[in-house]
Image 1 (cartoon, rainbow, N blue to C red):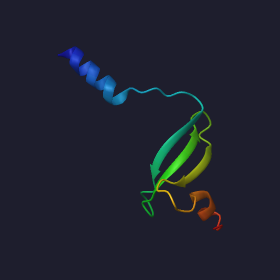
Image 2: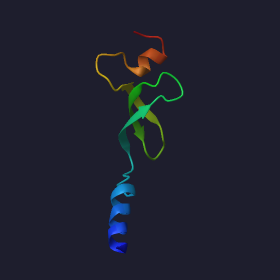
Image 3: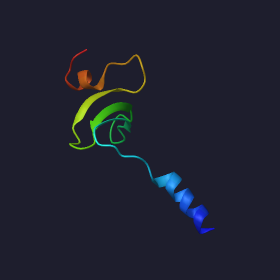
Image 4: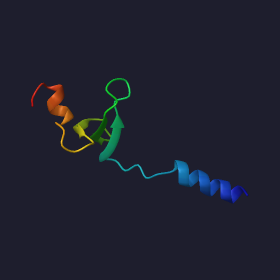
Length: 68
């Protein structure tokens, strides 16, 4: 039973976390609740780019800066 639990915990919680740029999906839960595609560097936590996850919308970068 312990091996089954260990395998399940590894499946649920363990994942590779390579250093560098990483594509993520975020939700703006404190505001408009939109889903965003974010590229973030896992070493520096710098946000390299953002865009709305749903196609056909303005990028979040442009919207935040007031551009169309």
